[in-house]
Image (cartoon, rainbow, N blue to C red):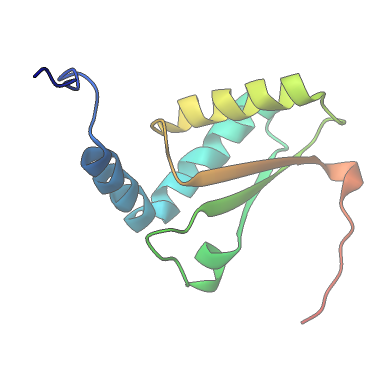
Length: 116
């Protein structure tokens, strides 16, 4: 009986889970790298904000790290946004399957409010 084997160059699910856990542990440093990548890709006026469970200090092993990138330029097409996100992740050194969820919004589409 023959079994399918995973090529040695393909990480196992355990390897991917361990890498994800490491990224979650270092989310602040990686979020700073995302912010730098956003400024490189979208311009110096780009700003990055972490929100959600990471910002509340409630990360778990299943969490993602939500990052809002406020772009100094106008709205992008879906393709432009996907390319920008991929380039930001690349410049930030984020591996495939990373726990970061990047959201890009043009500055002129933001509504500032305070519920605090």
